[in-house]
Image (cartoon, rainbow, N blue to C red; front, side, top):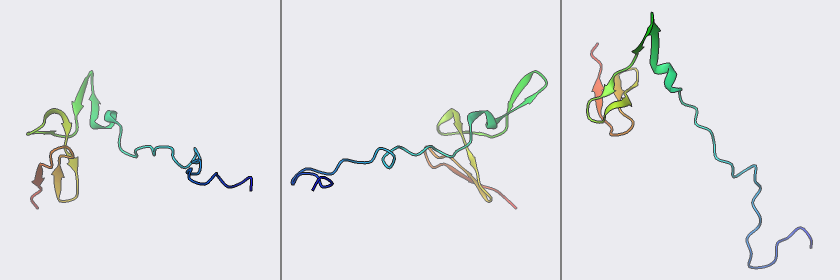
Length: 75
């Protein structure tokens, strides 16, 4: 009976299962390109949220993950 926890108490959690998952997004440095001695933005900022919030590029649109602003690309 050594493997079971006492009645009324939850079992201890395994620390390897409860660890938070790491995000698999792009780093902020991938949103800039270096041309000469200047850094140039490769994506647009959100017009609603302002500077610092980049728009995500999809196949048919660009969207803001913060406020949901969407611009559709023309063919």
